[in-house]
Image (cartoon, rainbow, N blue to C red; front, side):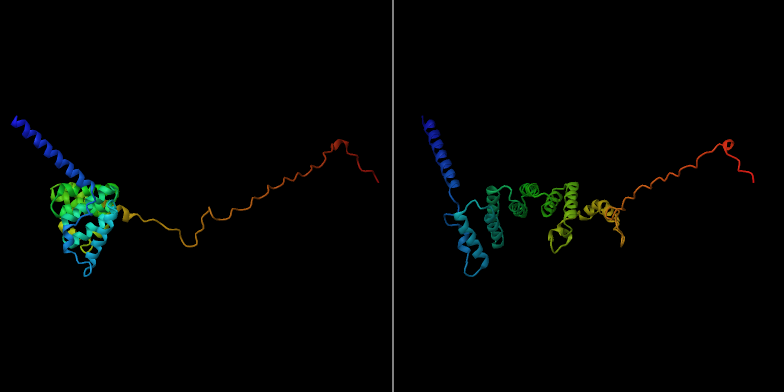
Length: 244
């Protein structure tokens, strides 16, 4: 009997906890006070003012993917990467096609060492935005870190073929972390060499295409002149000239 009562009480508590979690999920998470707001000083910091504006907007529009993404980026600058990750997750939950949030989510996950989570986010980025060179490069870093050399080289080569500025340390500091860039460039060489060796010719100066030159006027066919033949006379029938 005691055991039955214990099980019944446990099930009741579990049911209450489940109802509580479901109720919390249905609530707007920005309605209450958020802990990091106590570190904000909107009057003195433009970054803090931006965070406050984003929070105010999300109280009215909790499914605004773009604002979630902006808030996440601001929170990274403020030093709250965990809360930023939550905002990027909420952004893609609100709009799964919103590839900037997928990319940002991949960055924060990679920064905390979540290789599987970051790889998933970067692949979602490329799925919704094919040819996203930065995401392809990040996938190369993830693959290289995991020891998948060929996969990493493929990602690097594809990323660099789309965006050469990825080789510039000023625009892409993570290029210093990639140890397989030279092999990626070697893989790209045949394609680059073929492209650069194509010497396409332009039209010479003054050239007029046959298709644009005026066509000659059609000439009338020459008329056939028939010359009448002289009448044939039988020599035997010719009269002799009169004698003098």
